Image (cartoon, rainbow, N blue to C red; front, side, top):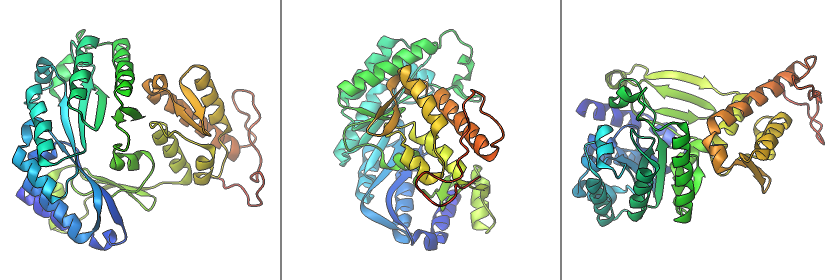
Length: 382
């Protein structure tokens, strides 16, 4: 950890010239469990950002913490240093379920962590919950929702369980004890309805917040804003380019300390790709998409996409309000599939424009207009 910390602080210092052009209004310490890294190190990183960048007073500064890896003194020190928001990995109110997840805390410890955070001064707390756990039933999930709401957090995230190879839960991958798709869907819709009644509005597929407490940092990802990442496995999106840093911590530390490249991936997005990301990310949120915004990114209409959205609307998966299309709760439940269909329509329409001799598969005439309606400049072809 000391070597990694040294590299991380040096990385931030080396980026000072680039940071000078930005006002930093959100900072997020996440990916894993930053609280295991130690409050002192986290504070040092934040201080380095303040020294080499323009961190605004009142910026949203979030740290992910697990209940078992942070003390009241840690939280008090972090709050004094400028941390303003915590995301606490509560996961479940069922202690047996927590053990099956390999968690080292019980729900009583999670309650104490929230209480300690309040006493430290934090006024913006999010809790993470997981549904679809082994042997979990709707009543158990309802109890977790109820006890989480009783903690009075400003924000709640609800994630469906995904089983990854190499994790403790991988033994359950084919288990009959895992809730099936219908049971998970029922849990998801229960959370949406119940949290809404308690004043937590759904603003993204898995995220719910009291008014004014949406995660400003995560909204940047979903709304297409720029962000800069430091540390192993961090990703950035700046100036239309996206790049990722090596995930191995030793390679990262050695690369920074010995002045070799730590960039593992680097790509510049075309307008077509940016438009695709606009569709994919915005449709994950309650803000949805609009024709005008799509046209500003990619100088093309979205007729095929609109036809697909109208089909979704007829099935109760999407709605059109205030000139914007957004998914309903049932649509969010199917969002991966629905967004995939939207992106397929975008690709088909692009092909029709670039290859006008090819008719669309559904018998409709392709869009062949080479000038935008009401404008004199030619349509850009990609």
